[in-house]
Length: 143
Image (cartoon, rainbow, N blue to C red):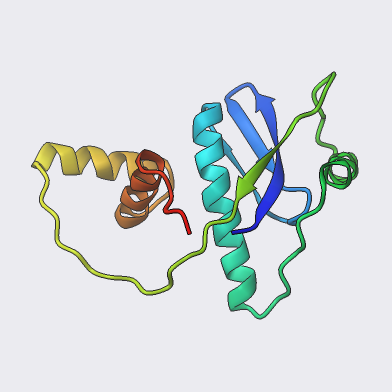
């Protein structure tokens, strides 16, 4: 499972995440923990989309190279970098299983309504929301 450096940049409403080695891959979260979970999902999905389009996957770089790419990306995009020491965190790209399986689950009506509200607020489908919630609650399988 490849790992890529990500920059977690504090914002007023949480944290933005940029991947210097993966152009166009970015996300955010309300808390650092949420931002990390969203980063794993965004990176995995982005790499899966590249692979599905027969595009070459970018090679992960070392820390100094990733930091230099981050600075260049932020300068080109006009994104302000925080003052002081910039920290990059390795984020794993989970291998995506492409086979979808339909399942039947039971919830209380009020619980399902809450899931649907939260999924809509996050811009996700019910299935995507439940899968993301499960991924955050359970550690990824070790290979």
